[in-house]
Image (cartoon, rainbow, N blue to C red; front, side, top):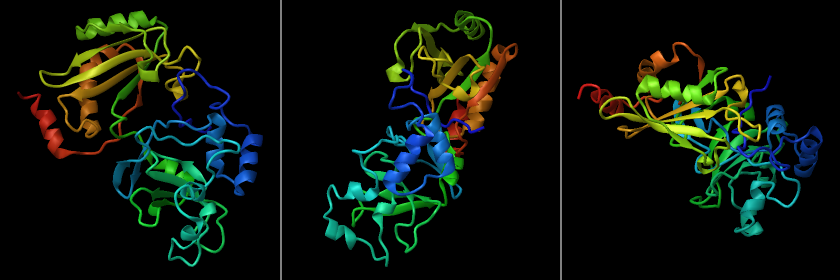
Length: 318
């Protein structure tokens, strides 16, 4: 079974965001002149583009944010849109200049269908052999810098396949710092709310807003959880299922409640050292979770930052 990579839309699927049919995907392949990778097609059948849960790239023994600043995988749109990197470049570079923009013996910029427009200054493309004579049957993935490139585009990163890209994406970065716990319970969310307040001597606030567009619940709860005198976490308790019947964590639908724990107060580099932060959270949450059916739904990728870790550990000795 293909694992769903998407953050499902809180307001539910529309005609534009619902997964594409095999026929719609084939039509797009005919339009661009290339066949998509099998895994990509399966992902687009689940949802027509959007935000991914795992948006950083763990590659060559280093992890860096890739799909940041609201970057998404582009939807499959029929007609009236940029199809390839060449279409984008022709908006501001003369075609004659573009044809001489590379020292390679071969240049086929129309062999670069767009996977993600990123933030506009960079772009992620399928590469069916833009700088070789014979096109590839299975595309590689190329990340281009646009804004600062002397010739309008500069290759910064290359991966062997879409599968390699997906397999090396991790949950990490400025927008991926929360630890998510799933709870499976027949109790109401109000009962879980009461249990949290009692366990942590904490007063949670009841909310009904949409959490800047990420939520769609009748109600949810939040508060600040003190881990020690210096270190605190923002805590949110929500259902897993939105009112629209989409999910926060659709791969784990059986866990009907989600606790979002984000350590932001008292930590400067809050995206790092997740293994150590996880152990701190487990010690704090163990009494509360001991009688519940629960799992970690998502945990930030561990990138060690020794300087910041020393600061965190010092807060437990102050």
